[in-house]
Amino acid sequence: MFTLLGNLWSCLQEQTERKCSVLLMGLDNAGKSTLLQALQGLPPSPVTPTWGFEGGKAEVRGYSVDLFDVGGSKNIRGIWGDYFCEVHAAIFVVDASDAGRLEEAREELEAARAHPNLAGKSVLVFANKQDVQGAMSATELVKGLGLLDVRDGGVQVLPVVALRGSASDAVHPNVAVGLDWVVGQVAEQGSGLTARISEQTAVQRQKEEQARAERKKRAEASRARRKAEREAAEAEELRRERESAGKGASVAPDALEDVHVLKADLPPAEQAGGEVTPREESEPVSEAMAAPAPEGSPGDLLTHGVDGDDDGVGDVALPGAISATSPRSDTG
Image (tube, rainbow, N blue to C red; front, side, top):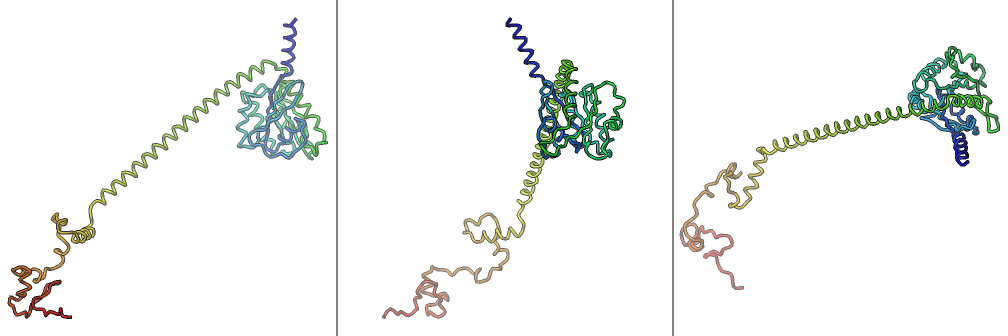
């Protein structure tokens, strides 16, 4: 009894927790972001070009549907393939009023359907902007997009108008019809599709991990190379500085003259070393300076004078001394 009730509860829980993921893609300005609002039943609001992706949710046939709107500009379309492994189906939005880009849309749709992670999964094509005069019909788009030869039943084209003037405006009926068709396709493929998604997701994650490891390895190699170059440049700069310092050790002639002048001002005891002073190099020695000093003591110079007699004539007194012949003037 309890086992039966448990199994019934598990079955009901599985039914209420059924999930699927749907990718919205298409060229830029096709109306994907506006359609995302309509698919969720949200009131209309201004949209901007999608960079990366925007997410949303809807409830259809007891399924919780995760919606992923990816950007459609040329430099973003390369990431579409990263989502293919994780989604159960895709919705391709076409601007039916822009015949000039129909060929570009066809090429992108063909490339997406040929991708190994999306091949075999259901694709709904929304021919958007049917409210614009001259917009192509669903039949014209089937031909223009090269879908006439599709026989597997995995592609559906529906005309739609995603834009609404206000919150009171009803969502175009084909929005709900199209999403119901997508979920029905997912339900028909059942557990086989779920197993395929699990396998593809594991492979994709492994590739992403390998790519991250390779990027990390390249980054480390780049850092090591820049470090080696920086160290080599620093070593070269240090070598040049040392080389310049070694050359500057030889003294120039002008510097020698300055050294000699400074040395001449030092006491005689500190002038030893064999250097020739600037005076000895450049100034002639006068005869008076070279003459021998008079014999006798300083006292003899005071008493006899420098001319050798005692008459006081021609005598020269030494600075700071009182001549013996000088008259006294201590009477005052």
